[in-house]
Length: 295
View 1 (cartoon, one colour):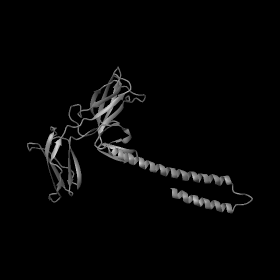
View 2: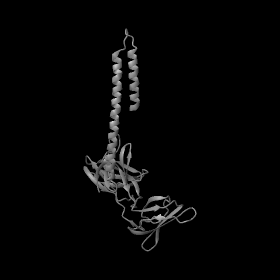
View 3: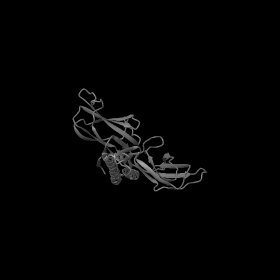
View 4: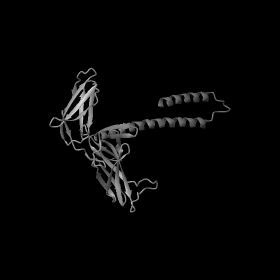
């Protein structure tokens, strides 16, 4: 630390002064040696001062990045990377006044029929629960407005208060993930493969194989045309030559197509790798990878 260097420097000067006072006149101390030591101490001190200034500059720069990133929350951003997010078509927000042993959320259609029963978190505080828009038997429900009834009890069976901003939940069409890619040169055939977070293949899409930048919208469905569950997915581009052979690079990896994805920013965070944008439950992108804001 700087204080340690200053203390050592002072001790060095005391020792040097004492040495000069008590040196042998017939064999004086080599002046060049202690001059070199003085210079080395001075250089260390200057380096510490410089590092301190850099730390202040980095802190200031990171604060500016956090401020910039906060303006992206709720917006769709296009960024370099392969992350696709499928959002839930509806969500339930509520506040628990205190801890509850059991919380029940019942969703009913316009005719009063119960379509889904959920048992969300009962800890005190604010909560948001995603609803995948399905009935208890897994059937996908049509878009529209559904009625919500919530109740909670503690371990003794006594009722616990729930602050529910609204009893109406709107089920919307799930936003369709988008991604873009660029081929430097045209290829014979190309496809986009979409994988879930476990690495399993979910969907294969035929895509434009000509050179230049292209944009693709994935409908959020798998190979059986069934809607996928909300979460994070990844996309990879594969190109084939005239013999329908996979085109690879010198390391036998599929040819690299510059890839960007469009995701909605949910939150921001700061890590040792810089400011990151949260685009899914466990999906993040670095701020410096953003190429456009889509609104």
